[in-house]
Length: 372
Image (cartoon, rainbow, N blue to C red; front, side):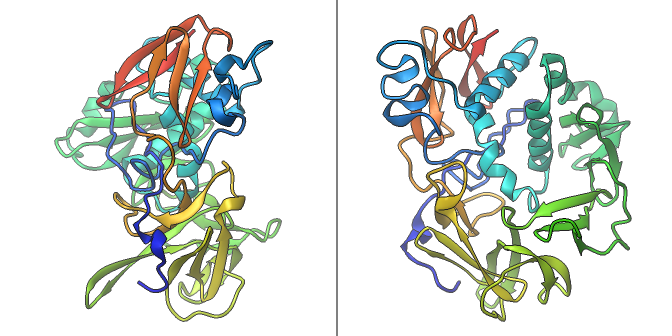
């Protein structure tokens, strides 16, 4: 693997999305446990030394509590909604969506459903809409009996089945204003297309966006400057993994069609390296550079994913950090303590308008949430 620097040994701190139906917490590799299904990075946007609450914690040193970071506020709302009649994912799994989402283009398996379900919840207007995104998977058992290890559509419900033919996770596409379709795999979308015959193209209204037909049979829009893809190359020393992190949409010489490409010098083969905090890859026959330090959430660097679906791929994300996004969350009275994008953080649930703080178990770990 060419051009690797000492960050080759660093772990990026992400956490894969935890599927509410089964508590799937297997690391996906982009971070403190993985890339995340729900994104986080080097520290909260408003936290300072005391986390979200600033220097003095959730309440500061006096006066009115500071405004919550919008991502934290959204995650508190989602978890409070899911806790009413179900089990919340926890604030850390929700926050990591922001780091997982850029890998959505390359994500496969149940994690793909997890990303879409979290996006549905984040867009939901009220608690009924939040809960509608993820119907109880066990109610869809009949659909999986003859489809072990597959994903499928049951009406507008997108269902993943485990290897024993039991439902693993589900998303109601209609709750996101979409429909479910299955071509090579199942998925949610709005504009049907033929995966075998629809050619990719650049959006005429936005040169940075690639439009292509997904393997579920829906048109998808890929924002090239923020999304990642990955290629696995079989060589004499075994498989090598390379990240593709383009800058814009254009003709991809390596793909032989339109794709996400770089804008730098010509390159003849896949490559990836960290140049300080800049990720450099060969994308479509040209070098592409992505400044990790300039990305949101703040505090990101360049490193290599240590495990999971994207193991060995170079990526922007949290390198190191003061806490693990896969660790237990806790309540201290009404104060919720958690790892906020690699920095210990807290929020006073009562000051945020909730009744208090409570703890539940999800995927073998403790998750804390504000009680509605």
